[in-house]
Length: 315
Ligand code: XIL
Image 1 (cartoon, rainbow, N blue to C red):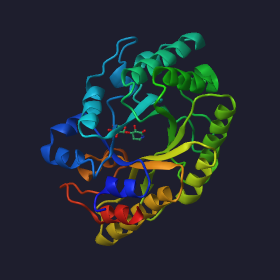
Image 2 (spheres, helix red, strand yellow):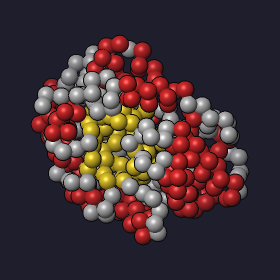
Image 3 (tube, protein in one colour):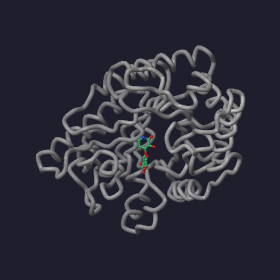
């Protein structure tokens, strides 16, 4: 195969996909590449299904942005990954600052997850139900959910999501769990506990916001997650570098993309890989990591970089 999703499917995987955002869908040249189902078999909304976008005020749900992305995926025969139900970031002030007691916040979490996942019932292959719940040292993140409810917010969210769309695969998603370490262990331990308790969880999402030349041992960690009896997906892949990128750096980046893809290919439970947008034109990296970028497989001008060949080689 010469295209990325076709290569992933030929390797026995469900998809190779990309994140996108609503403003990007008015860029015709960008859309012409994104809509090619041989290239991208799956779409994730980068922002428009998040809490601040979908429930900006309590009980007032807005799905305009999310629907545009879901309809784009459907029109092009692409799978949809919902992103996300419960996250400390991009959370409206009415959740963060309200001082809700535990029974009210539990109901707020359940209503939010149930309503958002339910709105897309039958349309989403998977949902990131819980996003970024842990600190890098494996302790729980101190956010309004954990501080009010303890870890009970996790089963509450998964149960609401399952009831709302029984066919969607329900994931916990995080970063800095791509290789062995305290945070990956915390996720593994939680997933084992949830499964033992009968909480409906189907997958572990490994974000994979990585750095050129500094890959952790993905093959080992993906296999370890897979051994828990859940799906594994690489959900937000990009591999950044200090700008400007030299041609030697882009060659190393090609090898790094190949290594990541080969790690997924080699683990039976790894169902697919999503890049956190396919082009540097719309990457989140320069806005977040000062002086860094060039993290995506296509460049600012929508031209393929060596990384594209790396992905094909990996599959
Ligand atoms: C990012 C988006 O890409 C940006 O547009 C936004 O400004 C901030 O969030 N981990 C996640 C994603 O789970 O939701 C984040 O997306 C990137 C890090």
